[in-house]
Image (cartoon, rainbow, N blue to C red; front, side):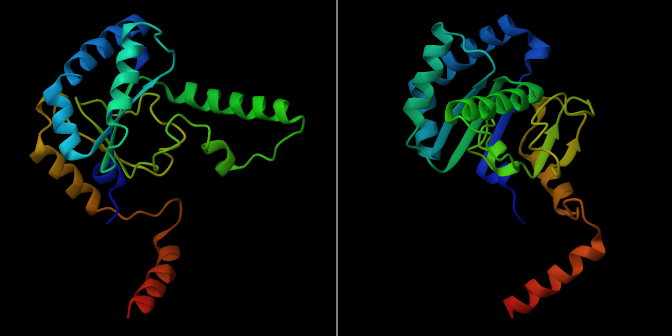
Length: 204
């Protein structure tokens, strides 16, 4: 079972629509001030955690300096990438990727061929695989403008447990629920069977 979203990548989200730009900037500042503690960096280094911060609008203030410092200080860690989408929106991500493609066409003086692979290179989280599992806490049952492009075939898991109480046991339940599902990626179970049989034959 592939669990890229859990084992290889981890994302903590606080939407700009919920907090507002100023609120998000304050939240990022407080969070990074805590994370930039020497002990926290020591823990991240031991665990091999690379810290990434996503923002729709660069703060250009002290919070921005903290972000650059945190990303630089953890850049050599390769075991796990922790992405904090502190000021992020899925619609914004799609728009900015399309804008970058258009700007690239203008710079090269020609209309570039556009396919999913070319488009995905410009998404804010182009460095990460598409998530296998999306966990929404607090009783809400929607994705709320989060990773709209990347979550086309992501399994969704909703829980009434609030984020501060979402512990290792709660995570285990989410993973157990995921393990019981059939990943079809838009296909039917019957369409998956030939591929499964082929894989079994190759493994023999």
